[in-house]
Image 1 (tube, rainbow, N blue to C red):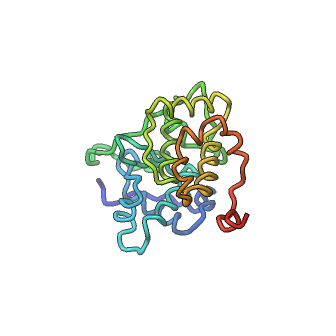
Image 2: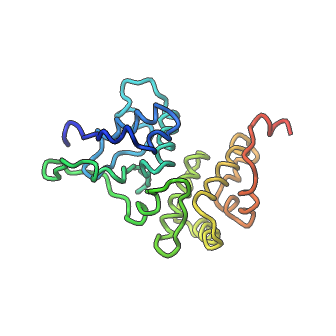
Image 3: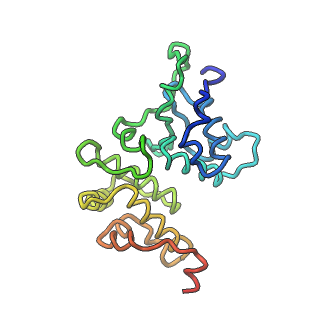
Length: 229
């Protein structure tokens, strides 16, 4: 791999970059580019990113994970899971590297995400990543949703179990979007994650069952406010 990558001046005018929540996330995106392989891929694990990109900066894994989530939500990166390992891809990396020469690159060991997953997750207009039942494989939607649940709830659910697939696909068929699944996960994690009795219900069969629409319409409340009610 070459010792560096090209960063175009147009990055200063990027609306997505300016929309990031912190300068730390902007710094991560900029430094991350220099570490990408010929396909624009790198590890998507916060601990690995922290060690290799923020080597000498005092950043915690949680802070780096928050940066990655911010980048992901704006479509600057996509993250995907293969055989239990988490990777990331910068969708427009190749087109922004005019001097990229595959013949001079080391052979990459990072598997590429599927074309369907790239289509699902890399959005030109980022506010709402809608599901396309005609063009996008629902299996990739299931994988993305379970990945998000595991991240937020500190769980390790599989995306290939029949019950999980059936629950998620049933909600998709009712017209719910990936953003809807993420909102339900965020809402219930905020309420249940620190509650020993309720934490066990942060599972696909509960979250994505027949009460899904009700969960979707709940508000995410401040933890202290919730305890006082």
